[in-house]
Image (spheres, one colour):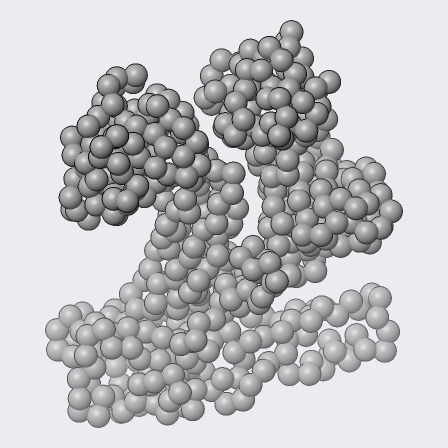
Length: 505
């Protein structure tokens, strides 16, 4: 389901329970929320109550009766965890479950639909439980069968019912109040096209990652440069021709690089790294350029007086994005700039889990490093990264893998060997990092181009039966935003036929 599929009402797998005065929605063991739902989606119960998703890791409260100290098994009906899931144990202000430590991360193992065991490391030995804890204790981690909503259900409790999910173009992941999500429209201030050649959405794919303690950098590959030979430049018609259909709309931003003799406008060179803006001429191969966005929108084409050279290129802007994390995993990726002139779907790379350690976080007197809620355990492996050639942390080589020791919730020391003596460290510099090695999983993601399309083709603006395309604006800016309004021909009378046969655009 793409971000453009607003109000599509996709059915969710399994059955679901909505409890009056509760913000938690629980699915049965067949539910797969992590693959079917995103933060910000609207989930609608069979009874018609709609709630928006706040997160996908609600606390699972386990009463003392749910702890078996004989088999080391914990019971929570349809918990939704998978083997290897990272969960944080919270004692809830009461007596901690003997064998576990309040605020510590553990890993699910030996899971069944309603039961699981815990290990200190992913795939490690099951922890021996020697006490039952208290009735307020809970576990927090990503689950397939639980959702936290932004508000409590206000209607009657619905147990084991069907439910549907819709994805409106509103971003609630980064703003509790909600706002129009720019990455869905895919339009930057410097671009007035209708979102067909830029990145509109980046979705997490096979894994949301594990052990993330700070938001990772997300890198989107840049668009392919268009090489324009002199034979493709017409100084008579002020046009530039490409072999394949360019699919660029008026306002598309391109950056020029000469590679030799510069192309000229009105007898003056187009300088390297200068921006130009496309004017769509109606041709699938030829286009004109303007020196500003306002000129492009007004249809004022540049007078091309020199054809340049055979190595010159025009390249669109590279898209940018940011990630959000919770519970050690990514909860979503937001496109902050859609880029321009993407001729194919770009690859997306998510940075591995790491901790940035400024000099203020290093105490050279006690050899203690501070990073709030780092989630590390003694003997965990982490790799030191000098980053940018700055001052090295004393007695630690760039790229060296070291071992955690003497950890507390917010601090730790490092050793050259597991369980070895703490290294006598210096402060280094403020951009240095430690990449987490033990049990870390790097998240993966994929981009979508244009109007929510995968970007395999450029045929994404074709009107179809049942939909009406509305165009906003006039002149060069016409079509900057397209509204597609679903016409339910089977259920509407007196209007559907007219709208299909005679669109109002």
